[in-house]
Length: 69
Image 1 (spheres, rainbow, N blue to C red):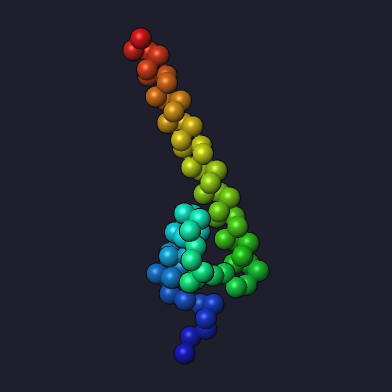
Image 2 (image 1 turned 90 degrees about the vertical axis):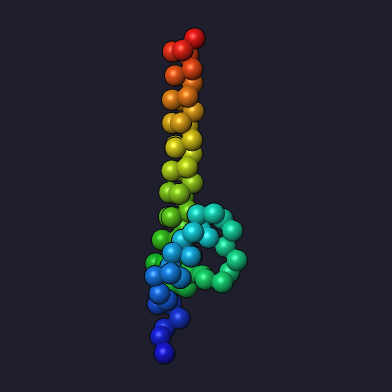
């Protein structure tokens, strides 16, 4: 018998993926305060990362487009 808060790596990866996609179905949830804090931090960092990535790609696209014209 294993503790319910110490699931395998595949469960942790699934929880991470569901957190970043914002589609958590509640099948895997953070239970302890440190785990909840890490989940919140991952959500925040993941959204900021995507916003920065998209803005960088758009900036590059516009710069190369302006250079061609």
